Image (cartoon, rainbow, N blue to C red):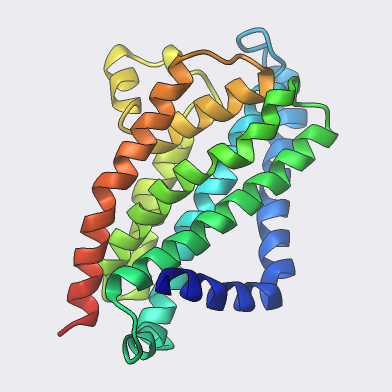
Length: 249
């Protein structure tokens, strides 16, 4: 399958830059954990029967996964498309736009799993996971990884300027992150905001990661995973259509 060959190409690049990539995605969430968990957490009462650090730690796993997939399929994909002309070179061989999109999505999903696993390891060492169910978190991260990768590559297919990604990060990713349930329970917000939260893909990722980290498994987790999977299925043909317009003149 051509998409797997494209993934293999990306993995060759990743082997050369993995340390820099991982350190960035390790240090930033660790700073949040330290500042929020050990700093602000000393002034915050327990949330839903957990310390504040224990509450936000699984959310850091979900958010790290989201940012990894999103940045790879925005800046990473745009550089390959616009500056390096890597996609255009691929099309000179037996490769389709569908293969290119699939290869990029697989690579971004892989990175979302890896960076989520890094943060999961950190919070486990800090004693913030309470159940062996947490071992399933890296496998679950495949689903939100696909969803966030596809959201990002759809935006990449629409933008012609790398500076435009500031809008995506500031107006979409940041609000989605802040109002996802990472730092406070969604049920503390007004009723309309709780309904809107269900349209926020990272909310579903946070809910599953927190439940698995604490061992609070229930059938409702399948609903959250299903919403993310449905989003990925809807976005895949759109991503291919948008990238086709960019690559096939």
